[in-house]
Length: 158
Image 1 (tube, rainbow, N blue to C red):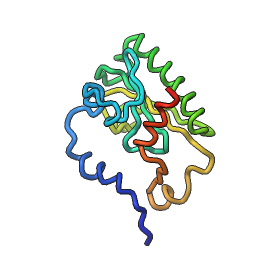
Image 2 (cartoon, rainbow, N blue to C red):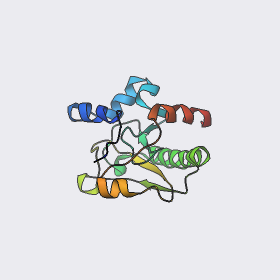
Image 3 (cartoon, helix red, strand yellow):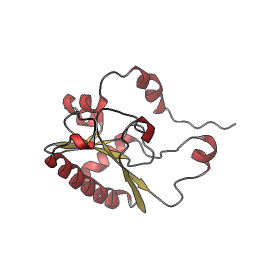
């Protein structure tokens, strides 16, 4: 068996089970954007890199207010989420040159939601061939870029 060196994953292993409260609310209220990987703050919503990404560039668009479902959003929050989704897709296109995107919402645990209680929308850049034997055979995904470097790269485009 071969080893995959991924020291950044230890944070997930050590901290994830012990987290209490909403990490999105904590990130938003802490006002330490770089620490929490917040790349953009709008009037009613913000954009944050996913700490446990499916692919490089995986980010989330999130309302500032803790609301559990899309039906709880105001019209202005809904509009801002969609505008930010479009803007972030364009930034990712210029920055990373993906060949496609998965843009989606998971509502409820059966739908794959890892965080229930604070609505958010995922934007995942995709490239031809980005699924290889690692996730298929080994249930392991290789993410080639650190989140800190990616966060700094976003600042150049926003």
